[in-house]
Length: 377
Image 1 (cartoon, rainbow, N blue to C red):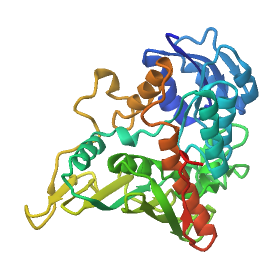
Image 2: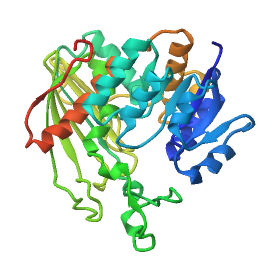
Image 3: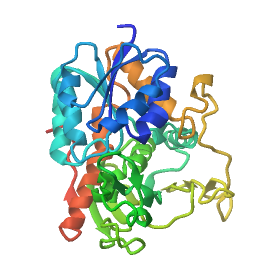
Image 4: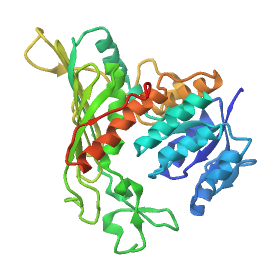
């Protein structure tokens, strides 16, 4: 196989904004099929293709899975069945590159893992924050023992995005609560119905990558819905999870989509060890910080960034601090070499399942729950 024939499923803003451009720009990919159950999305997607000739457009996912000119599914959907759709593709003989969060039910996590084990196909979660430059720097520091034994880490994703909480079922256009008077037919999107804590893979994936660890226990807590900031939105303003890892570290993670928050400062992380601490910046004018035991009383500025100093030219401008490039080439290289990616299906579920169980914990009165090890059923 010299190139991967892609069926792009889900033609919303994420697909059109980054996936379509990158799949056309990077070597090794050929888009053969576009699919979305909403017909209004088809033409805008076709118009973004440099060469739409020969590209099939359809509304049926099952039709895509039956096609012989599709080697892999690029799954850019936002729905409760996201994990089941990925498993269906693997079971139909297609590789899968799936958008975060990957799944919303533990049984779907298991179904994905079992499908990969049976078929040997590649599944990769398109989680890009693990490829950021500062995450790579922290990973090397922890591996070299510069922070000592890691005891505590934090991550939060506060992305104020009320404008994505309602959708017109006919046009697929997104609306916020202030638009409902003019668009009474708009219905809640899955982004609103989903527990916000489900979106933690963007925080868990980089942290677990740095720590080379997995979560074994989780407990969740959150504010009550509907949103206090936007009562028209049923989703709680924020949810928080405490997690224990196999190596004994404690993690605190939080997620919010309707709590007002400074623009652009969506992600924040910190890692504390017995001999030092690193943390990401909290504001646009701020700097990342580092503290080393015995070398001063306080944190000092560091010069890490999103971009990697070793990034090739093709990565520049790919999206999310150049990190989108790395998710696509990792998937491409794994499929073309007939091998599993470093961020394999087990690590993907390590970043997905604890978030699902955090929401379950909240539903059960903040009861601690064990996290399965998908390598050992």
